[in-house]
Length: 365
Image 1: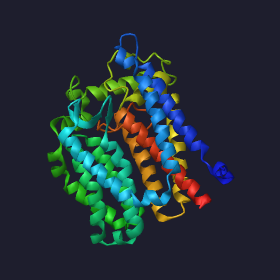
Image 2: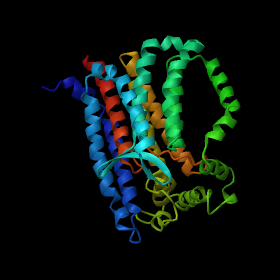
Image 3: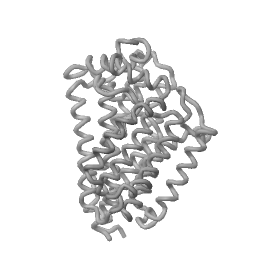
Image 4: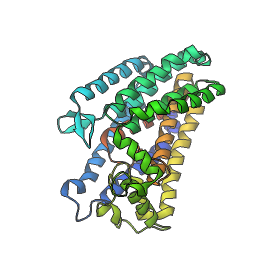
């Protein structure tokens, strides 16, 4: 019999907000498939609906899994995910100049997205057991390596955006576990000194994107094209927007990757500034519910995991919106729940399921 406490403490607001954002994303994807679009693009919204169904399955799995099992499998899942990342470099399917996917019949799996959850679980387990060690420099070695190794493998694909996300998750989790503030200063100083090395790791097109961010007009038909067209889409929406199915920038294919990384520009063009504010408020609700769950977690592992999920959501939303608005360089980070993509949708829904599990565990056990 279902425990009444589970019904009472189930965070319906969190689930409803996530599903609403996902359905808004479907509506935006549908709206980009105008009459001039090929049939495969007009059918993208149907595939996204299928990913949402799979995502709900992942949510239910993470909601119902026994917490002890989750803790015990953390390192194993991380190790298996590392093997998948290595396999991508060897047998991965290429697309858009990158090798990021493993072909599974008619479907494609993106292990770098799965690594976001695997890394959070591994770091939460390690830092939950030895969190006090991060107060000494020697204690930072293992958690930094846990984040650095997959980041470098993802950078080889190349996928700069996801590599940055994994590094930020690692640093964020270390900070949550009690890292002294002075270490943050030293980390920032080290990062500044290491900029030339980081620059040397970037591909030519990635460098061009950063240069284009500083001066898009330098190459308006090349590296600056994404930023310029995205700004046009966002600006043309003005206060109220052009209306649904009236996003000419995406329907006429002026805006590249409008169904993935630039889906927020599509919504801004159709629903204007006010519609954009509503979407951002929904993300604020999602993040605030996650923060509440993290603060009320019953143990350190759960609190760190919930905090890491909040960092994941917050960082991706801030960078994606900043990228689309021309405030940050284009680095290829999707907007959670709204951007088109199967693995990304399933992973985000699984993260929601973990948050729900953490909340229920506080009251049921």
